[in-house]
Image (cartoon, rainbow, N blue to C red; front, side, top):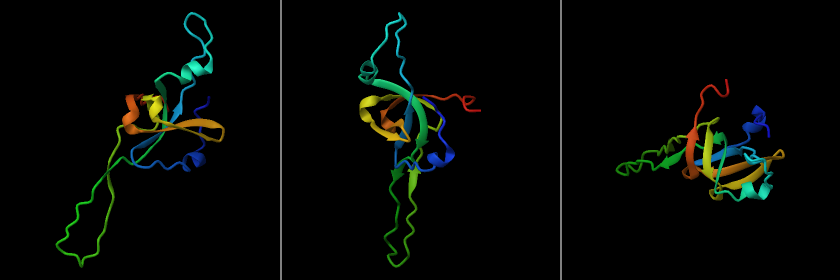
Length: 127
């Protein structure tokens, strides 16, 4: 599995709300004792890991409007509470909460931010 996604392909992804796009890590096909595991064993595990590729803007905050002056033009700027996850982080997540998609023959998972159990951030990983 390659972690290389061309920049032009990455721009096609627009995550909505608190959604996160994850590239799953390839599971280990062999145990420590040397037994080979079929792919169905890894797929049935509840917790998976993968790299975060793209993050949505966050949780929307309701607009605070003043209804005292209804003749004024309303400018509704959407504001968001940003998510903790960032692109490049390694995420440990609940597999059952995600949706699998395939793009350019690569498998990705779309899941809500609440399905992420832990984030491992290594600032020097992508330098």
